[in-house]
Structures are given as C-alpha cells and as structure tokens.
Image (cartoon, rainbow, N blue to C red):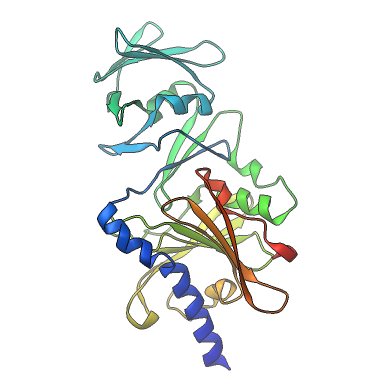
Length: 302
C-alpha cells in the first residue's frame, strides 16, 4: 500500500512538471519569452504588452502606467513622456536619454526610455518610486509587484470567503525565501501551474515546468519552504530549502488528490480535481491575459 501511495504521489508530481512537454518542443522553435506579469496592490493587472528586462532593469510600456494609477502624455515632437500622479507630481523622461526631470531637478536613469515593439517603454522602478511606490520583481515566477504607500498586498489575502478568491489572493502575494533558490539557465517558456491541497488555500506547489516551489501562506505572507527539480526515474536532481527527496512528507498535500491549475504559454487555463466519484476531472477555461484567472472555480468546494 505504501508503495502504491508513493507511486501515485510521484505520478501526480511528475504530471505537474511535464504537462507542457508537447508545448515545450514547440516553444524551442517559437522561442516564446517568459512573460513578466504585473501585480498592483495585491491585484494582477492586464497590460497591452508585457514588461521586459533590459540590463537587469524592468521596463514597462507607457500604456501600463494607467493601471499603476499614473497619467502620462506622449510628446511626439520632443520624444518625451510626461508622467503625473493624482496630486500633480510630475516627471519627464525622454526617449533614449538617461536624463529625466523631476520637478525642477535633473535626475539620471539606469536605463533610458526606449522604443520596443512599436511601443515606448520606461523604467518602472524609477517611475513608481518617484511617486512613492515600492517595486519588487519576484524571480521565482517573474511577477512585478508594485505597492503604493497606502496599500498592502497582505491585506488582499484576507478578503473573500470562497476558495477561488482566497486562492487568487494567495498567488497575489510575493514569494519570500530564506534559502538560496535553485537557479537554472533560461529555458523555453511552456506555461506554469499551481497545485493546492483539496479544499485548502494555505499553501501551494508552483511549477514552471522546470523547477517546483512549495509555498506556505501564513499571516498574509507567502513563504517558500522548498524547491526541487526532477531528474531520472522521478528522483530529484536538485533540492533546496526544507525538502530532501521525493518522499518528503511536505509533498503529501500535493499528491494524487490535489486540485491543480495550469496556464499554457498561450494563456490557456485548465483546472483539474478529484470528483465525487473519486475520478480525476478536468475544467477548461478561457484564454486569458489576466494572470489571476489561472485560478478557476472548482465544483464541490474542491
């Protein structure tokens, strides 16, 4: 019986990491870049184009500034963008220049505003921090978290009573880790997935098809407790944090009966769970660009 349970856990964990194997082969040819999603004050926001990293700095298209609570005006003659907040603070950045003005002061940027994919991109850290917000790029999931002074991501975890909204709140928290994370070379993006214990919202297993991260939710914080990478024969090729091998008790919650959600490289959302007959069932959602839509409503409070 113990061997069977172990096999079911391994099969479930393997499926979490390999659901996009077909997509991965296609991505090798398509070379789909991994998207950077944006979360503002605990809510994911949809942008017309994904942020991008340039010289280890994150740039966002100027159209995304409205979702960050800022206004902008593009001057085609001077090739500059005037950005302001509700209290009329204003900064001006010029295309391909590291010089910017903040009020009557000239400041220097690490990365200039630039044209990318027929859109004007600006450095998000400088822009948001100039207006009193904090910026964090969580490297595990490549999510850009922006938090204004009068808001907190943690508060969002307390709202909502249904499983869907609570799970959305859980993934809307930036993951923190006290151990050295597994750092693998860049690989083709082939989607990602979350796995929750049936009927639970206080932790999840996240996978990007290469590395899996186990996260606990406590006191409005998302804490990574361990990571692993599969190797040959379903063994773990690499581990980090509070996890030793594929029989670790911490993995039991994410075994054969776990409720899972998958987001493909094309934005296709799929959910899976164990139905009332003990059979694995699947839900197919819409193609969505809003990251929180990866969490679907699962029947029977699963």
